[in-house]
Figure 1 (cartoon, rainbow, N blue to C red):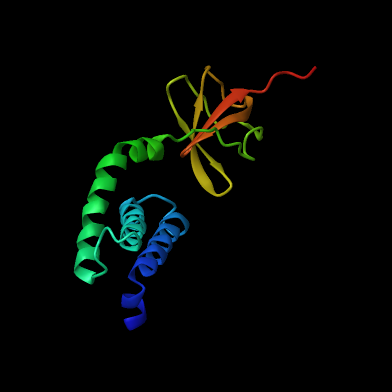
Figure 2 (cartoon, rainbow, N blue to C red):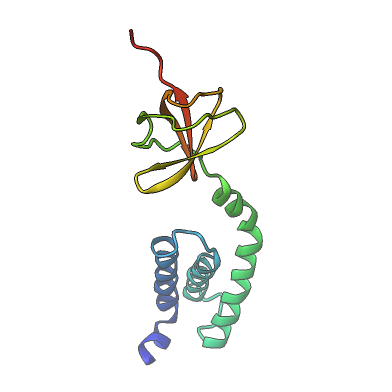
Length: 154
């Protein structure tokens, strides 16, 4: 403990780096608390090293709290927009292209049940399809298979 207190500036900088590493590697930058405190401890360590803040535990903790608050106020909105900027990409699925014969009539806007791979799926179509029509899966949604009539290959 004496070593940490004798080297308080360096201890704060190392602690800040550890907190930032945990925030990025463990939490995937999903919570900002460790980010704010990590940046604040690094800044506090720099202020102590520059003799702008006394090298005492109380002064360093107060400085860390104030700097954390300032960092949070300044960077909250940009970080929140950065976190919400997510690209939505359509995932390709092995079920797309699977062919089967329709076991019952299917109208647009309606769903029918179809068992595939041990799961009861709801089928949807963009056109009316009669029972016995050969169809293939064109899109997979959560619990829903979108199907279309197989084009004649003659």
